[in-house]
Amino acid sequence: MTAIPPAPSRPRLAVFKFASCDGCQLQLLDAQGRLLEIADRFTIDHFLEASSRDLPGPYDVGLVEGSISTPADVARIHEIRGQCRFLVTIGACATAGGIQALRNWASAADYAAAVYARPEYVATLATSTPIAAHVPVDFELRGCPIDVGQLVELLTAVVVGRRPRVAPHCVCVECKARGTVCVAVARGIPCLGPVTQAGCGGLCPACDRECFGCFGPGPQPNLVSLTGFYERHGTPRDRLVRLLRSFTPWADDFRTESDRLEAADAAANAEPRP
Image 1: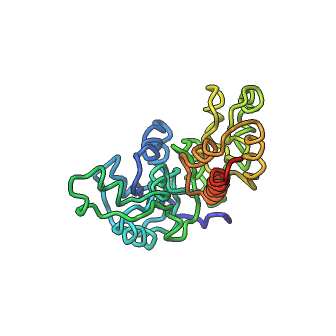
Image 2: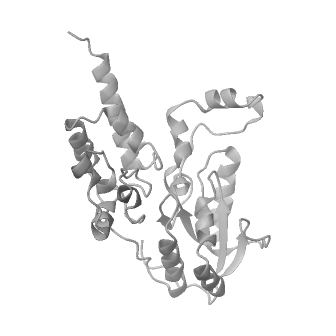
Image 3: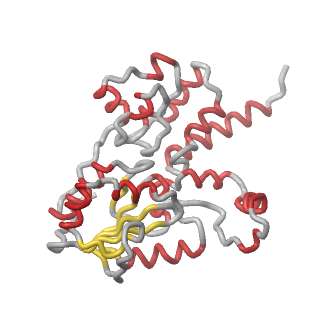
């Protein structure tokens, strides 16, 4: 992405929600003192999580949380895109479909029939997809939830008219920076840190857990090499499929590799045994 065009002295900001848990919007509210600084720099004209103030567009900046999951969502995101000069997707749901994208490998109709007494009243799409699958997006802020520091950096970049400075490396760099022993090397735990975009501070490996890919694929991820390494060290393919299909399952690189592993596992299980 190139530098952001200069904005007015106090840009108009709007925050929108689609299918999500609201966690990324809460990160903005949890910014506390920094939120007050943001409020001094922006005119927050639509943010229903925080205020009843609801002024119509157009807006200089639109932050969008959540995935597209219903026919109404499709129409609404096109309206929002038309209202926003600069559109930013925030969080794993908006950038990669979110946990709800697991339904993309199953039948949404079957789920609705199992959960609702009158599923015919439920209007839903067969898939949960990122915002970018429907409209052009100017910048993606990843994470489940997003990092407050990255959000503040993004909004600062909007005010001064420059490119946001988001870490261009993987989670492994963050683990090394905080002195975390590699869980994959030391404990044999399959971890997505080598192929996941930085931003979380290496939180899960610091708690002796694998990285689940919350920030989506990092720069030039070699998924085949990584999963092949874990396979050779005894990790079943189905476990790797579940790992890739967690918080960002519909991200292109994760989806492609999980589909490849699933097909390979199905083919291996279909082979006649001696």
